[in-house]
Amino acid sequence: MEVILKTAYKTLGNKGDVVSVRAGYGRNYLIPEGIAVVANATNKKIAFENAKQAAHKGLKLKADAEALLPLLTSVKVVIAAKVGEGGKIFGSITPLQIAKALKAKNIGVDHTKINIEHPIKQIGNYQAVLILHETVSYTLTFNVVPA
Image 1 (cartoon, rainbow, N blue to C red):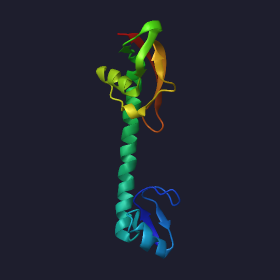
Image 2: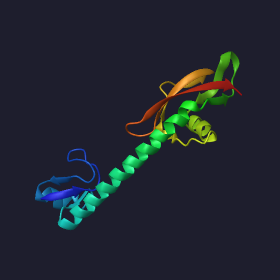
Image 3: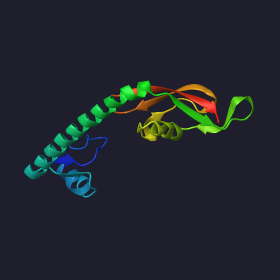
Image 4: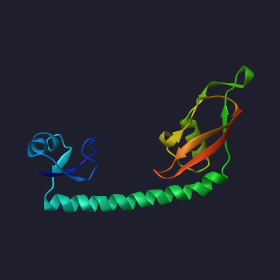
């Protein structure tokens, strides 16, 4: 029996893949759980069209991510934080604070796409990796100053 996966499934494949499974597995588990649909002519056309649209959307997202790179290279990000004795910050600098600082410079980056290697608890210069797309990332250097 051939089915089209509606979601990625670890042992079978990715979303939109046409896979061959045993009839009982498809009828009794995959289809009722909403993981797959029967691979008839209509569903294959729909899956092909969805894949085509997803590829087009992926190219547009990559182009948008690449368009952000020149803006990121020219921007200076400074984050002000409350500081105690010895230059220690109350709390720590989070990806959300970095995203807000970028938004103030009219650069929209989702805070879930910002990776900080170690917690930032001191003033100084640091780096964070911005994952703009699956294939496009940028290492942002920012400065933490006392407020």
